[in-house]
Length: 241
Image: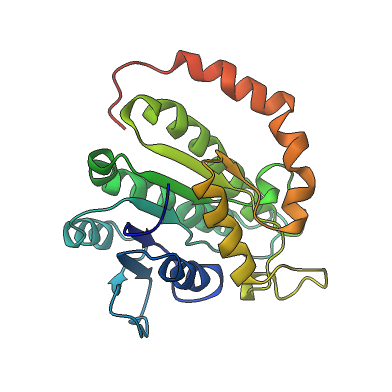
């Protein structure tokens, strides 16, 4: 998937990795970038950027955005929330699932018709905590694990329709979400570059930063990935996601 002259939609595009993805798509020659933000218009300095009001938990905004976008080659599900918790507050878990899992699922479903037409790509920004939970953010970890499993399911279900599905296993990135962690972090710009590099190489699982790259080889050769390959054979021929 070469980004040049392609149309890209990025959710959570107002800051952090989302904003860096917008800038990187422009650098790589995207024809148009739809920048989805939950509140307030994105300050766009490039005519190729079209701001879109898109709260991934708001069904009417999702539907309106799907009607506004005429063509789409790449959907990047980047919007997310992370709240420190200890699994004592059910509301925190539900909020994580609503944004990081169900929001991603609902946006994907809304734009699938366009992606089927273009034989496009879905890129889901996940996290290393999808593979093993970080105890200070267990609700976030749970939601990313669910989103990872959904990514694998979509990959198998859409394989025969020409739509590729990519999971991005991000390590620590220097964003507001990780401000409380005193650990080495990748810059949003380098993470965005790594995500697009992985997409252009056709990688199913993208490890875009130094921390995630340290486990990439083991993951791709591991039992969980092998099970995914084996189970994909059970995908039905007729799919109505």
